[in-house]
Amino acid sequence: MSATDDIYRTSHLKLVPRRHWGRMISAGVVLLLLAALVRAFANGKIEWTYVGDFLFSRTILDGLVNTILMTFAAMALGIVLGVVFAIMRISENPVLSSIATGYVWVFRGAPALLQLLLWFNLALVFPKIGIPGVMEWRTVDVMTPFVAAMLALGIQQGAYTSEVVRGGLLSVDSGQYEAARAIGMGQLLMLRRIVLPQAMRVILPPIGNEVIGMVKTTSLASVIQYAEILHNAQIIYYANTRVLELLLVASFWYLATVSILSVVQMYIERYFARGAKRLKATG
Amino acid sequence: MSEILVKAIDVTKRFSNFTALDRVGMDIRKGEVACIIGPSGSGKSTFLRCINMLERIDGGAIWVGGELLGYRRQGDELHELRDHEIARQRRRTGMVFQRFNLFPHLTALENVTEGPIHVLKEDRKAAEAHARDLLARVGLSDKVGHYPSELSGGQQQRVAIARAMGMRPELILFDEPTSALDPELVSEVLDVMKDLAESGMTMIVVTHEMGFARSVADTVAFMESGRIEEIGPAEKVLSDPDNARCAAFVRAVHK
Ligand SMILES: Nc1ncnc2c1ncn2[C@@H]1O[C@H](COP(=O)(O)OP(=O)(O)O)[C@@H](O)[C@H]1O
Ligand SMILES: [Mg+2]
Image (cartoon, rainbow over all chains, first blue to last red):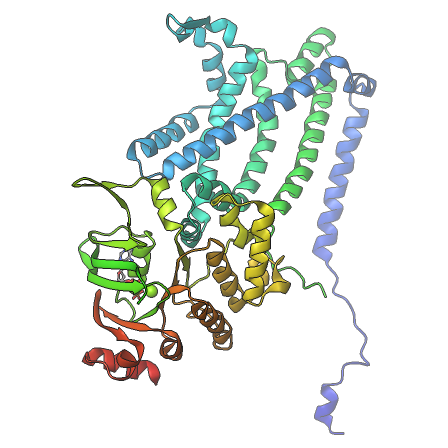
């Protein structure tokens, strides 16, 4: 055996793993800071018994239900509007596509809080709504906090969602549109059966994020007296002055809701990813 | 001689001021297999797409099965058809694309049943049974539950052929069906097409496969610059064309 052959023999050598000094130090610092934070909360003037008492109180749970209700109502409206306006936007009809562009421009352009106040105070400029002489209602009766919040948050959401949906529609290969037409599909059937299911893969992750965002955005509706969880927590702490405890209770429920939704989102995305990956051959 | 299924007269198509088809005429009889050859950019795909109304023509007219495409005649007026009427006319014609265009979110079986169930409103059971037969016919009985991403190019193209047949068309258009395939996968697709031709299906095939054209086609048309420069029996056009450029093209492809 020659000397050069010896260089290429490694099997008898001992392997010494690399030490990650930087990682160890930064991890240590972060853990120390975390411990300080936990200690501050434990020793702070937080009455944890209040947190426990109110966590499952009737008012708080009612608020939670209203938060979830508003999240779904506003998102449902947002998604319907988003799909409709996205299809209008890419349509060849210039009137429809301009209206869709205008909708996105206007409703993305104003803060959510302002839109909530606008809808809620609609009665100031339109005392009555409906078809004059046929069916009319007093605006104050119709524009309950629920309806105002759903319209404000849903319509604004629709503006964002329509951009997401439009991106999804554009992501589908033109060959798919042609193949759908070639088997005699009309416009709507093609969108429903071929284009939207494929666009879903692109649309769903951002929509999932927006649902989660909406859970928290609903808290803005507390300013128009919608009895969601933050509003109800505030009502309690106005009475008992346990501000931080009740804010922690509300935080807990927001976090719990968001966590559950994240899991749901994962399963839905997995469903729409079917056919997208080359699966492992089974036998 | 059998009756005429496709009649194209003076079909003209412009893209802005570029003329992609210049007064193209063609008669295809029931059961006939016609191959269209010609250099890239000569308008072959555009012509097929006009027959399937994926492009709207600027001049001339096309009839499929005696039905004028895109218009309804009322007395001395031609009324443009609406979207759903165009969709209905398209059902008579199947199309197979160069890049397969299978629906990636559906299995092979679902790709074939999609049209019959949702467009033709066939009963699901019957449509599935028919689709299984078709997939068996193209040699894919063991792949019915596979998604397109789990199939080779040749297998995908065979599913695409089954999908076109699922609509029970009177005519199938093929736009370079083997051009996107690895060389070793070409013959499995050509074999399926040959079977289809022998079963009596009317086919218009854009292809560079001269062997296929020679052995299967009744008619061959040579296109160049948006015009049909030569058309006639396969043997004549491929072996002894009158047009010099057609002769040069056939020689070049054969090399
Ligand atoms: N949508 C389109 N817009 C503009 N030009 C087009 C379009 N489709 C085809 N063309 C042009 O028309 C000509 C014929 O195209 P095509 O029918 O695809 O040729 P072939 O299939 O024979 O290769 C080409 O020059 C091409 O660039
Ligand atoms: Mg082409």
